[in-house]
Image (cartoon, rainbow, N blue to C red; front, side):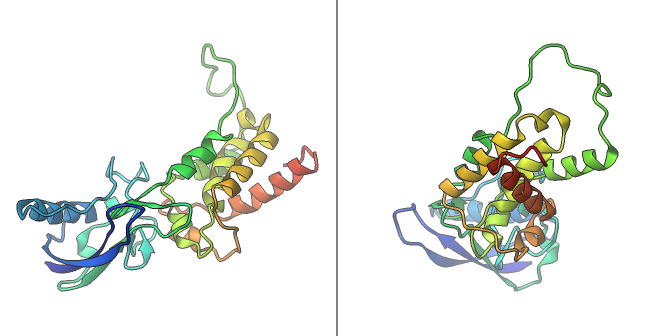
Amino acid sequence: MKLTLKIWRQKSAQTKGAFESYQVDANEHMSFLEMLDVLNEGLVEKRQEPVAFEHDCREGICGTCNLVINGRPHGPLPGTTTCQLHMRHFKEGETIVIEPYRAQAFPVIKDLVVDRSPLDRIIQSGGFISVNTGQAPDGNAIPIEKDVASRAFDAAACIGCGACVAACPNGSAMLFTSAKVSHLALLPQGEVEHNRRVVSMVHQMDKEGFGMCSNIKACEVECPKEISVTNIARMNRQYFSAMIGSDEK
């Protein structure tokens, strides 16, 4: 299938970028990233600069393949990362617009690559628990209700890709931060430090320059792991309780 790609090219954060058009012949069974590999192979053969884009596991679990495809983070399919998107979902002769995430907190490094290290710093600011090391306890030593465990695991499914930030018109990282706060706070091991953790992570989020949540819920729609915005409500409750010195969660 022959496609036209309009790709954002930008040499660095200090230079201006622009869209450039390319023609590519792709197989419908290729993944989206494999299609970009084919494009880059052709550019290298012509001694042209290949398109810079991020990728790692290509299995939908690392969160690295952060692209905006035809205006949607990770492309048109719900619950799907860019690396899991296949070319059979596009039509012969279609024009595909590919650009990097657009958010103040995610400056462009080169072409389609953005700096998502602010998400790492949010995690580092408090996304951990303090436990004594030693022999691992039995798996059933601490009883956890099935509903609570399920909500914790659902939140922990966040891969930190930043699609929620790219989808939000305010550039908010509330869904990401709330998922990291929730998956620790919901479990007994994370309850002890939940007050300090939620305050630290929210303050770091604000420090990084992310916008505020206005309940548009575009983040939930575009999240490839379908993280629920109920995590945002939970984090807001925990933050308020922590700020007034309450132990309620």
